[in-house]
Length: 181
Image (cartoon, rainbow, N blue to C red; front, side, top):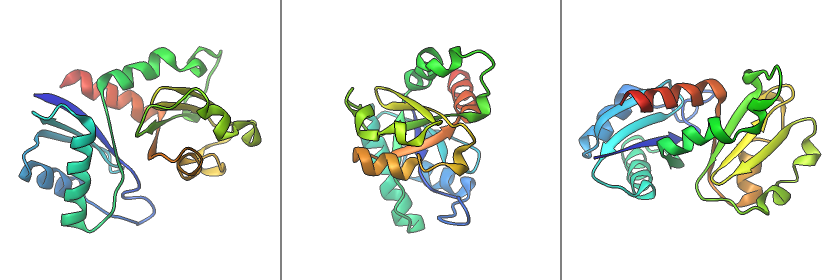
């Protein structure tokens, strides 16, 4: 059995694409996933399955959500190692007196190239900052996620990827849940 963490993008945000987590849990159990566990209403779902390929798991979840709920929901599936890397490789954590409420991680559907940082043109969003590590973009917002144009839509458009962003508290909790499984 392999545990996967599926990050659903854009559900239960501002009254759009509303899916109750209990209904999602039941739906995923019905199609064969085991030990389905959700975290908060924004679409963080752990599933156990014999399928080892994360992309295949994400595709199956995406298909079932469309079939049952009628929403086209992008899904990014990550591993425990992806969450662990957030703590090891996020250079913003090394800053003195860092306000973790301003830290976010964009999880990307594919591994990014080193040139992707140039494509993002992050300098036009100063004082917001970002750095890339594989399939993650570490973000430090100067004011907050709600007051910037450097968001998931911008990242997706510039890099032609699927992206979903989680705040630092959520990343911390998801790693803790992964370790308890």
